Amino acid sequence: MRPQLLVPVTPPATARRVAMPPALPWLAGSAAGLLAWGLAYSQLVPVSDGLAGLLPLQPGSPLAEAARFFLYDAPKVLLLLTLVVFGMGVVRSYFSAERTRALLAGRREGVGNVLAALLGVVTPFCSCSAVPMFIGFVSAGVPLGVTFSFLIAAPMVNEIALGLLFALVGWKVALLYLGVGLGIAIVAGWVIGRLHLEHWLEAWVRDLRSGAAALPPTALTVADRVRAGLEAMRDIVGRVWPWMLAGIAVGAFIHGFVPTDALAFMMGADSWWSVPAAVAIGIPMYSNAAGIVPVAEALLGKGAALGTVLAFMMAVIALSLPEMIILRKVMTLRLIGVFVGVVGIGIVAVGYLFNALPL
Amino acid sequence: MKDVKVLGSGCKRCEQAAAMITAEAARLGVEIRLEKVTDYAAIAAYGIVSTPGIVVDGRVVHAGGLPKSDAIAGWLG
Image 1: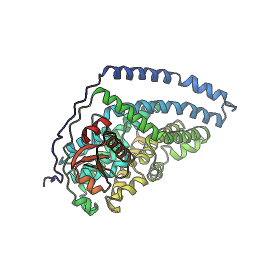
Image 2: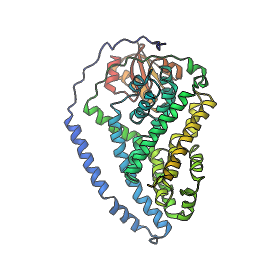
Image 3: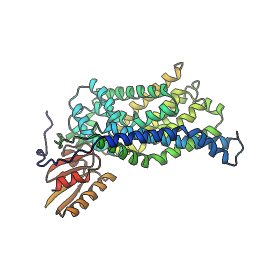
Image 4: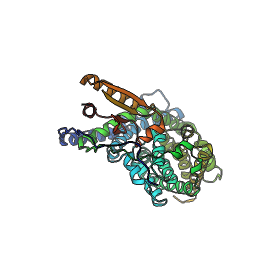
């Protein structure tokens, strides 16, 4: 059945023509900003070393090591985050949740899961909008499994996680994360689709049918897109910096105080239980990607196994207690259980895989 | 009298969007009746996915993110 349109929509009567702002000043401004950013980034080591030297701490002591980690990572992550979020804001101005839904509506499973996971990376998404998005997708005829592929990929495989992994841990790990993150979103969504669990949605969600509103076309100029980047920067950096500092503080503690032997035992590749344990601990926890990547960096630096760390990181970002509480509004506990179970098993499998690989 | 609805379930930007519309209407001297729609089913029925959404006289004019103030003036004018 075609989704029926509940609201009569007419094209806008008056599309006001606004004089196009010239692109050049905005492009020049962006270039100048990038140059300033590069200068600041190149001065990170001397500045943080200088600051660490001012502290009355014995060089080489655990506290001094922790302080050095913090003083180096805090400005570095802040600078990276600023740049990544700006780029993300510009890229995301080319996408919208409405257009993504139109691309996915009625799409077959399989192809639909792949497309949904890919769109999840670039479509504007915040966990506060997860429920309206979920309802909007399902009610417009996006298959349940395809909707889940989107909902898994969107928070987990985002530009912040990828950008910070790239800069703090290296391009190989960032690329692996992108690949396995998309893989989990595609496979888990496909599995949930195969299980045909539509009857485990809340009844009012299942019965809802909606069409797409005909929004007035918005032709964005270069200036608009740069402004979207700046807006995202102000908004997201303003929101996640406490997470970031907390994550770096935890990373600094691990770097300075946690004995390498203990960590290699707990999170090493030889302990078969380390992956499921990391996932079990990570699932109820919630942190933004900006908070967890510094922790992952410190863990890897201390000899933790890559698979275990990736599994922990994915469990923290992709699944969380607050998210489950929000999702309870639209789906039954059983469906939430299946969702957490399928994604959790996928993450554990990825953890074992990377612990076994000679990387 | 313009009938304006802000669609969104208590997100921060929904509040900001409502405040921007009130301010813009006052500046232009346009009388509006502003209503906040927070029910998820009602929001979905308007055919939008991202919030805040804005509906003016029954027509969806905006979805997702804060609107620009000159756009608001266009919808109210």
